[in-house]
Image (cartoon, rainbow, N blue to C red; front, side, top):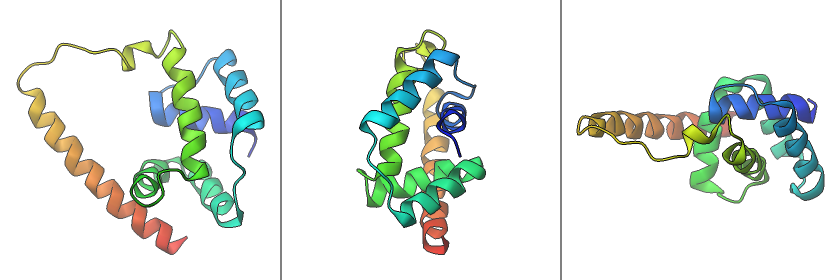
Length: 127
């Protein structure tokens, strides 16, 4: 898969929409210059994540638990840092005033994150 397509998949995972042309260009440049090369197993897992993007959150959660400095996560962090600087995505990174009922939402997200961790561990074991 080409780096342009990687940028789109990661942008949809992190920001729920496609990146603009400059974000894609920045991602391609950064990966070519600073990304850690993937080993054979890592490359296979990465290609599965990119072709089946629904797996990406679970694999990311499992890698965050087991190998936080994995080269796959390195690529995710590169895209995250690019999106953080882009005007179209800044609303995702700025604080927002929340109601007290937001705690229920946080509880739900914690449960979902735990489920993604379990699914990711199983997926890594299978892959």
